[in-house]
Structures are given as C-alpha cells and as structure tokens.
Image 1: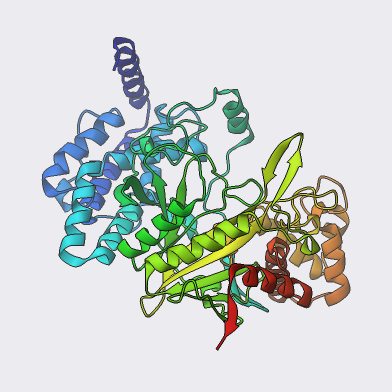
Image 2: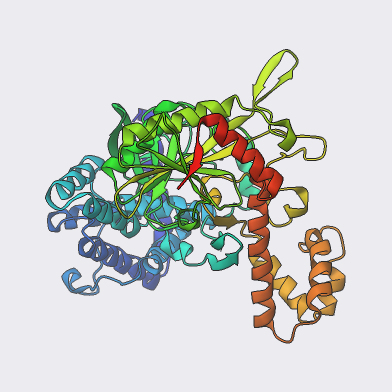
Length: 547
C-alpha cells in the first residue's frame, strides 16, 4: 500500500468513527451485537476455528469503527443465528449510516456484504487444503458437498435471493422442461448504470471469470468477490479452476475456468477437457457454450465451462434410434428427441468417445445443406465467415458410461431473421430475445426478471382488469410489448374466473413458448424434411441406423 493510500484509509476510518459518535447508542449496540452473532455463525458453520474468534471479531470491530466489543453480556453466550442475511443487514445499515458505503443501494450493499463475510473465512490456501483432504478421506462427492456448503454459508451464493426465483415444470411435446424467472441477480439503479458507463474499461480483473477475482473488493461496475474461493483442477495437463456460480440456476451450479484470460475456442482439446472433468467428478455433468456470436454464451473472452449436479430435461429425452459406425465400434449414437438438433454419443471408453465426438464436430464445421438453410461459411468482403459450431455436454449415465451430447449450432442471419435464423424469432422477443446458451439448450429456461410483474399483470387482464387492459395499449407501458399475445390469449381463453387459474394459464403458455423458442434454435426442424436432412448428415458421418 502506498503512503497516500495509507493516509486516505486512515482518514476514512477516522471519519467513520466521527460519524459513529452521532449515532444513537441503541443502534450502536445492535451493530455490536450483530458482530458477535456473525462470529458465532462463522464458528458454527466452520468458516473459522475457535482460535480465530478474537481475530475475526477484531477485524469486524475495526471495519465498523468500534474500539470495544459488545458489552451487553458475555459474548460466549450469544447463540448463532439461523438466518444470516438479517444480521448482515443490521451491519450494512450501520455501515451506510457511518459512511462506509455512499448509497444504500443493492450494488453498494453487496460490496460491503462481501467484505464483511471475507473477514470470516479461511485463506484460499486453507480452503484448497481442506478440499483435497476431504477428497482423500471421504471422496470427491464429500469434497464438493463441503465446498458448496462453504459457498452458501459465506454468503457467496445468496440463497435468500435464489429462493425468490419463480420456478415451474412445464409439460411439452419433448417431456417436462423447467422454467425460471431469474430474480437472484440484483439490478443496478439508473444512476449506477450511468456511473458505470463513465468508468474506464476494466483492466483488473480483466473479467468476472479471472482467478484474480478471489478477494477482490469490487466496484460499481464489477462485483465484489472477497468471499469467493476457488479450487485448482488439472484438465488435459493444463491449470484450470473450479468454483460455484453466485447465481445458482440449478443444484451445485459450478463454473470451471481457465487459469489465464484466454478466449473461448472449441477444439478437440475442449472435448478432451470435458471428458477429463467427468472422470474426476463423475457425479457432475459439464458443458460448454458455443464459441460463435449469437449462438454462444455471454462471456466469450475467457474460456470456461459450466457444470453441476442436476438432471436436465435433455438428459431424460430418449433417442429416436441407435446408430453405429464401423470406424467407432465402441460407440453408439442417436438423434435425441429434442427441439434442438442433438447427437448423443455413448461409450464405456472415453478415448473412443473423444474420437467419435471430435470427428462429428470437425465434419459439422464444414457441412452445408442449403435445403434447410445450413451454410457452414459465407464470404463477406473477401473474408470467410464460419457459421457452424456445437454446444457440447458430457456426463456419466446411471451405469457409469460416458455420454457426449453435441448440439449442432449455426449462427447465420438473414433479411427475414436479422437476429439469427436459428435464434428466437421476433415474435418471441417479448418473452426472450437473448442467446440460447448451454443451460437453456438443456431445457432450463432462464427468463428475465421483468416477466414476474408483467405476467402477473397479464393474468389480471385475463381476469377482467379492463383499466389495465386500456392502459397497456400505450407505447412505453411495460405490457405494451405483449399486446398481440394478450389479444391472442383473450381470444382463446376469454375472461377467466379467478387469478390462480389465470396465473397457471399464463405460465403454461410461457412454457410452451420456451419449447417453441428451442425449436427456432434447432438447425434440423422436428418435421419430415428436417429429420431427413438430419439423417443425411448422420450418413455423411458414416452412421447407419441399427438394432
């Protein structure tokens, strides 16, 4: 730390103490009591050891400008709270009162939240040591169980927010899919968005996936990660890291990311890494977003995968038939009964599976079939633009065999479909217009948080809220974008008798739209001409339909 930074920090600390003098004694005592509760919570959850008690308490006292601990009774008699967030909120409110955060918004509160919990955790090296010790003594499942619980107890995974997500199962022609309206990721205020635009592009960390995020304090345009811990893993003799997502979209939603800030690029080595991960973590699936715009993920600048302990709808979907290839006798293949175009390869031999999967991937990158709008490349101003790639998914089945799903993707655009031929079409944009990434490919919809209130309003209209029905016809109204759909719903269902029925009806229609969105993203449509074209590609690969 420079001399100037040291002086600034001392001045901030002195200012906090000065402001604390003007705060009611009862409020101060509540904050001090919250410190003791947090220390007790951290001990109970194993975030700190008994020998860390005084050290951790003193860190928090210093952070909030206190020179002495709680005086309302013996600290050892304080019972650890069952719920963490209410206690944290007491301290964050106090932190705002004494100027530790400039505004009382979710963004700034989260920055302080992470800083508090970062004071109550073991160092990264100790967490890594404990992970490997648990793995050696009790196995990899026990190690991931403990690490996942640590990520929850440290408030890195905000389960209070995850619990607010709207979730339902949706029956579709392809089996049950999962629909979520994501409310777990806090939205920035307009002022914060404006501030972020004025800040220079981030230099450190380069992105939210870089290993340098561990312990990082964050800023208005980059989340704090002081309570983040990561585990090193080796894939294909390369250094990678394993962590959990703070916005878990499913059970044990993990991220595996490269040691270095290198861009995503799907190659044979990608498939090899995925197989290596499932060998080391047989209870987890793992997959990668595609590596081209439109069909790719949201972060293409840092090579990474997503995995976890969840059975997705795509895994439950059967195959239309079993295909064999004399070149890969140890591998079977099948076209999955799914709205997107998926080839499933299965084998007990991961090396054979790698060769079969890579052969299909390489063939697909150069394959064209204009009859179904599939062109592998186009020319633009003398440059050859690639369009074909895959979304690969690897798992172990119930018998321990390796499975690799290759979801065929193409990112071409056209005059009719400027956002993408195999992308949600414009009539779906009132529900979702973002890329269809790995998680949604597998049958779990992650819909924008705005839909919670919008769908509730549509249900009110179906129940007879005529005033809202008139108001929503004004451009700029949140429901205006849904106008055509609302008209269709009114025509089909008429006036519904009660709100509960209306909510179920609207949710069912949204779920069916998600199934249709996946059909839009499918390269080979689930109709006779599309499946015939799919069969031609399988034949091109050397596969024949067998018993």
